[in-house]
Picture 1 (cartoon, rainbow, N blue to C red):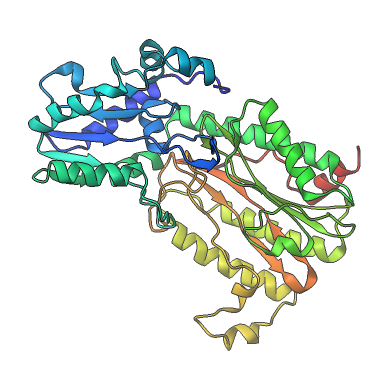
Picture 2 (tube, one colour):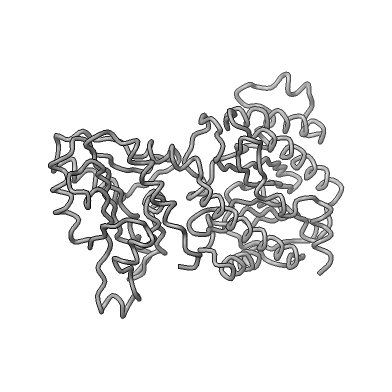
Amino acid sequence: MRHSLIDSSLFIKNRKDFCKRMLPDAVAIINPNDEFPRNGDQDFPFRQNSDLFYLTGIDQEKTRLILAPDFPNKKHREILFILETSEKIETWEGPKHTRDEASKLSGISTVLWLDEFEPVLNEIMVHVKHVYLNTNENPKYNNPVPYLDLRFANELRNKFPNHDYKRAAPVLYGLRMVKKDIEIELIKKAVDITGNAFRKILQVTRPGIYEYEIQAELEYEFTRNRAGGNAYRPIIASGERACVLHYINNDGECRDGELLLMDFGAEYANYAADLSRTIPVNGKFTKRQRECYDAVLSVQKKAIKMFIPGNTIDNLNKEVNKLMEKEMIRLGLFTGKDVKNQDPENPMHMKYYMHGASHFMGLDVHDVGLKSDVFKPGMVLTCEPGLYIKKEKIGIRIENDIFITKNGPVNLMKDIPVDPEEIEHLMNIR
């Protein structure tokens, strides 16, 4: 692994917290992600199921976890199953975890080979009443192919139809939303790497450079700083392409006089950073670009103050929409009279700002959590107002990651350049 060793106390505590929320006489089974074929004999790079990593710290494929806190045999109250290696596997793929290594990483004493999973589970199922099964309950997730959790759930229900089946996701999601100190440090490391990459971009951006060249610079900085790669597919969008919210082709030329919108983040130890910055390709904002940029930055500064315990994303969005509406009137995009006469179902601001101002962050860049969930200390969210004026080829988004504490919001990206004058200065000292 590229990242530094994570203290196994994190995963031990995560499992204890999960087990405390289980019913008596219950078992939970957490599966890994599938290995997905890319083409021919190639798979896409493997990325562990976030819930399994949260509970074990194991990145290796074909890893499974059983938690049965009331099982009579204490050695089988938490069991990690891993792939047994062989000479052939080591020759072609390299070494896999030994049982001792997996135990040290996870803090789990009982580590068995994967081929022991079924007989051990069968024995445990005889003693339990309730079964916690895990699925991906992200509202935006849609996969036409049944993934391992779904296949396993169907198989187990057919084999043991008389058990009481429960959802593990609500328990895990509630835990994952509030980060522990070690998790915050991992996110900060991802943020630091992301900030270093942005500073590099300020040095190399110039008229004539292509978006994919900028992406290459980002990914180089990620790799040399021990990140696992991108936390998500980066958006590198110059000119009118910046008005496409999920533009990921990154193959256009950055032209003189255009703005360059970048939305990217490093993934470190599976924890994400999420940064958006908008810069002038030639190193100098035009008067109009600066007016628009200042409007978005002003809204973001006000919005960050709203990341306090008791608030919600729903409330935040309403307030940010009002702030952006005022800025749009000031910028001449529409008038106050237009607002009074607007269709409430299709407000004027939606033409120029059509996305939300925040989402939860953690092991997933769009981490677990709903817009109605109340902010608590320990949560990490983004703050990302934007402005998109297609006819003027202006697309601006400014995004920082915010840590909620009982003493107020902590801007984890406060040291990453965002002031327009600082950006211009850094772009012109190369």
